Structure formats: structure tokens, C-alpha cells
Amino acid sequence: MTDSRSGMLRQMEQGRFRVEHPLVVNAKDGSLLVQVQAGAFEMGSAEGEGEGNVNEDPRHRVELPAYWIGVYTVTNAQYLRFMDATGHRAPDNNRHYQKKMADHPVTDVSWDDSLAYARWAGCKLASETQWERACRGPLGLVYPWADEWDETKCRNDKNKGSDQTSVVYGYAKGVSGWGTYNQSGNVWEWCTDWYDESHYTGSPKEGAREPKRGTSRVFRGGSWRYADPVFFRAAYRGWYDPSSRGGGLGIRLVRETP
Image 1: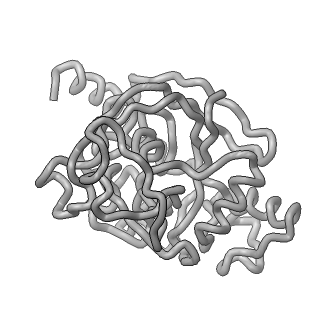
Image 2 (image 1 turned 180 degrees about the vertical axis):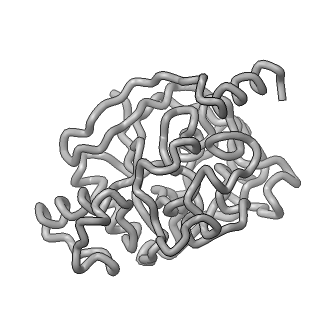
């Protein structure tokens, strides 16, 4: 790690370093979105870095245009407004809405539920590349906050106590360099992509094309159910049947920059 990068990380940890990025409010659902600037980053893991997860190899350079991504995941309160407006089904755990959970992330949503919400909000689900660039921040970190694991900086099985999820604005010391909260921990986040284990291997060295078909959809980020640091890394790729719903699955929105 270079001296300048080490110095920036120390300032971030001490609360003295701030990266300012444009913010907008999505008019349809009130989500706060932050702009991730156009540029290139190193996606995936080099051989031996991915804790044995070969679906993260090889590490490759990806260049993206600017885009907007949710500062927070979609909340229970937001999803309730979506259900009221559209008549969409309720999440499996949320048939009886509790106000005390209003600012917690909506969970138990399938990929199809998540896509329906995103379209209603005038947004989309993040691609794997968009999600990982936002999680890594401008410095290309392993976790949103640094290259080293710190269980105090995100909601996970070791610090959840008797609770499950936290409020979406919790764990402020774990915010990414772009300003996104809880990209590690709290809930897994559905991505738009089909899952392909060998996708990175078959993609061009400069950039990765999204698979055109598959049987499972990708999710990213770790959740309150897990404690092993491997699941919370920016590069980790999980997958489920798109109809799956679970207490650790949530939604983060993306909008393209005109």
C-alpha cells in the first residue's frame, strides 16, 4: 500500500478525511442517491486472494460511466408505500407492519420483488460492476472502510445481539469512500446480473460483460446472519434462485447518469 493511500485511510478512520460527492433525492420514493464518478477500478480477486472463491478470479480492470446509487438500502417504510401504490405482495416477514422497523431495510424480497420496486421508483438494480465499485470506494478497498476486517463497522452475527437488522443509517464508521452505508453487512443486496461461476474467466480483460442467461441471480454484501469476514468483502459473489426470499435479502437502487 502506498504512503499516500495509507495516510488517507488513517484520516478516514480518525474522522478527518471526507470525500464529497453530489447527492440527489429520487422523486418517486424519496431515496437519497450519491453519484459514483466515471472511472476504472480493479474488480474481483487475484488468485489466492479470494479465500478459495474461484468465481472471483481473475482480478480485472473495469471502466464505468458515472451513475447514482442509493446511500441506503430501501426501508420497510418505503416498501410499504410501494405496496400501497401498486398492490404488490408484502414481504414474507412484513405482513403486519411494525412502525419501530420503519427505518430498517426491507427484507424477505425476491429478485422479482426487488426489480418491481426499482422500476416503480424509476430506477434499476445495480449490476455487479456498479455494486462492487461503489463498495470499494475511490481507493479500491477490500471492505468499504479499509483492507482489514473490523466487525464493529457493520451489522453481523457477532454484534447483532438480540436484534437482526439495524437501521439503514447505522454503522457510520463503515461508510464507503463514495458515501454508501452498509454495503457490507446488514442485508445482502440483489444485483441485476445472472450468476455465472466462470464469468470473469471468459470475459474480456478490460471490462466484464454481464451473462445473458442463467438460473440464479447475484447478490452481494454479507448480512446480519453471518460472521465470517469472507462474506463481507466487496469482491464476494453470492447467488440464489430469483424467486428466493429470506430475512437477509434486501434492495439498493441505482440510476444511470444522463
